[in-house]
Length: 110
Image (cartoon, rainbow, N blue to C red; front, side, top):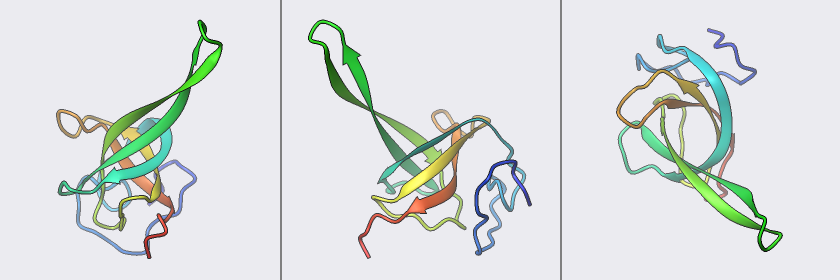
């Protein structure tokens, strides 16, 4: 099933209702890229994004990071250090409003 994004569909099927490929979850809004920082929760990963902020006083750049909780469907096999693409969706819980739609690169832990 096409989800409206230019991403590859996973080969493995799942029975998750909150999967954008095999369930009924629709994606909308932003698509972001980041690195998986934590896989400790069930069906949830923490995606970390680093970005630079300009500090005008010192005319330098300062590194900042944001940690975004995202739903990880069972059909997408993820590990810490993987680079993933996440898409915005309806709120799935108090903090989760994104879902992993593609694994771009593995973390090299293999």
